[in-house]
Image (cartoon, rainbow, N blue to C red; front, side, top):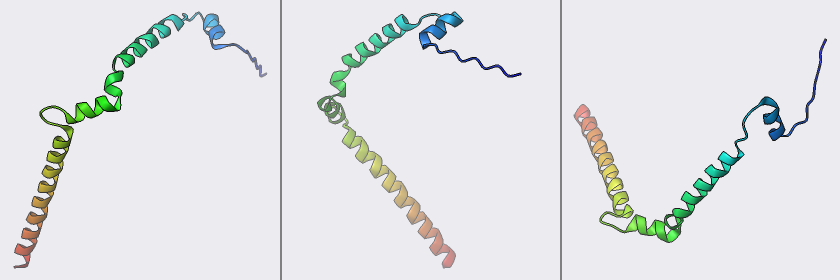
Length: 92
């Protein structure tokens, strides 16, 4: 014997039926706190604020990026020259 029961409840009604607490006030409070923090950081999110943080100061993001790429290129050049030198020594 199969029995099927369909119950149409809203999420709120289902929580109440199962005895779960209403978390809406907590969610509203958490959302208000998130909104407050985002609005406090809106200046840093602006394009002008981002450019200032990237390119101002003692070491700008451009200098850091340039140093990083120079380092990676020099390491790659060393590997290539080492590999070429060992290949020539095997032939000679």
